Length: 332
Image (cartoon, rainbow, N blue to C red; front, side, top):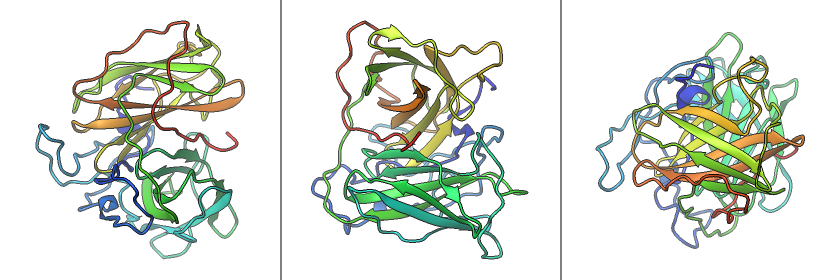
C-alpha cells in the first residue's frame, strides 16, 4: 500500500452531519434539503487502486477558508449511467428489517456483474444524518441483481446509504440514496475526542493531525484492558479500515491502512497507520473497523482540522466512553 495513500483511496465521497442535523426534536418528515448536493462534478477516483482528489464542498465553517461548490463523488444517486435504486425508502427503526436495492446500468437494466474489491463485490455504508448510527455492511446479491442485507436502525431519522462498487468492465463508483425511519429523534453532537472504546475492554488512541490539503500520518493504537494488542486479524485484506465523514456537508472518504497483512513488513498491531489527506478545513468523524478475537469492532473519533485535541498516550486505565455510539457491521 502506497504510504502516500489519501483518505480518498477507497470510496470517493459520502455523507455527514447536514446543516441543521444538530437541532433537537427533529422528525423524519422534517426538511431534508441539508442532505441534497448543490452541484455534481465529474467522477472522482475511488478504490484502493484508483486515484482522484476529493474536491472541496459546500459552505466553509466560520473563520475557515472559502470553499467552492464542486461536489465530491458519492453524493449523486446516478453517475455515468449507473443508478442506485432502493426497493423502498422507508425502513422501520428499532427492529431487524431488510434493506434491498438494485444498481441499474446505462441500459436501465439491473447490473449483475461486479468486480471484487477488498474481498467484496459490494460495500454499503449506512449512516444517520447526525452520524450517531453508523454501519458498514456487505449485502448479498440474488440472480436478478437485487442486493439484500439485514439492518437494525438505532432510531428514527433521515439516513443515507452509499453503495461502493465496481461494475465489471467499468470504473469504481460510489452512489447514494436517502432513506427514512419514521419517528422523532434527537440528534447527537459528538464532542472532539482522541480516545475511543469498544465493548470487550478495547481502547484505541488516535495520534496525528488532519491537515487540509496536506498529507499527514494518522496512527491508531489498539489496546485491550490496558495492554497493547499485537495479534489483530485481517479483515477485508487489511488490519483496519477507516471511514471519514466531514461535518456540514456529508462528505465521505474510506481508506485502508498502509501495508498489507503478510507482506513481511506490516505488524498485526498495536498500531495501524493511515496517510490521511482531507480536502478542507472542518470537523471530521472517523470510524475505525478492526478485527480481534474473530469479531469486528468499531470505534469512532471526532477530530477538527484546527484546534485539535491533544493526543493521549495509552495507559493501563480505561478511558471514559466517547459521546454517541456507532454500530459495527452485523455478523462481522
